[in-house]
Amino acid sequence: MDDFGRLKEALRERLPEVPRALVILGSGLGGVADALEGASAIPYAELPGLPSPSAPGHLGRLVVGRIEERLVALMQGRFHYYEGFSMEEVTMLTRAFGELGTEFLIATNASGGINPALRPGDLVLLVDHVNFMGVNPLRGLRNPDGTPPFVDMTYAYDRELLELAESVAGELGIEVRRGVYVAFSGPSFETPAEIRMARGWGADVVGMSTVPEVMVARWLGMRVLAISCVANYAAGMTPSPLTHQEVLEEMARAADKVKALLLGVISRLG
Image (cartoon, rainbow, N blue to C red; front, side, top):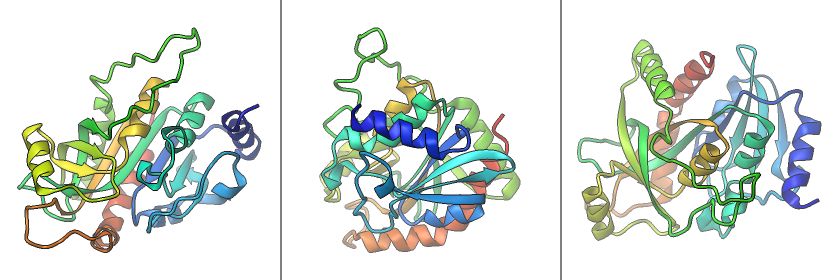
């Protein structure tokens, strides 16, 4: 049995049941796990085949607990392609939960604002993405019949979940916007010229994650919601240089409203 097979077996043994949702927590959002009832943590080091995240703001553990009786698994720390991990490693937990039967993927991330109307702290619900990472996470994978995974990505981001998130945000008084995310491989921040290019493609926010997990989730039939928190203005939009510390500080300020939105959405998953 390979590492992926061993990972699935380990999850089967350690989980009380298949979680309804897998939630990927972006930079600085690990505190969302505090809201889970009866939570237990599984360090990534105890799960076969998983590396240890090295990016600041990403703890390396899986937290499992309930939100209004719904079992959910939270990734406190995601794996990034820029850390040197393969796409198989980046998406391994998403793929494992998808194959076990988890229905929903809710991904969060920190992003740079490309759309001039966006400000740090704004929340953007993703409606589409541009994969500019230079690699496709489905490359080399096979459907059960041995064919390549020609996955339709027209509605990669579930429209019903999008509307649910907007409804919950309205009730909570949280302003959200819809937008398109463009993913670069990182770890360097984008150049001003690259941001101008991405704006011409129709992108509203930019980051270095999320797209690989979304593509694998859609291949496995999972329904996807993605929430992006604008942590800074993208390169060239202000004279200030970009730093990861700035990202972490803005995400800490936005954590409470992201947490409230996540809890509200998960509590209403049918």
